[in-house]
Length: 64
Image (tube, rainbow, N blue to C red; front, side, top):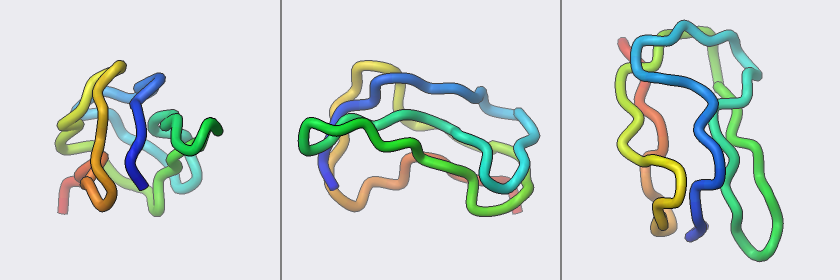
């Protein structure tokens, strides 16, 4: 869903556990916590706080 990135809680290179909150997205006047789908390392965070994102945008990329 389209929205605005309110908070980014991890950096590229961070190791995260499944279920960890990665960022907070405001969409439809609500805050949505985007959580890690699995344990892994954040390879790329293409957006920063304040950025607008389109529906279907890849918000976080994990290392293979």
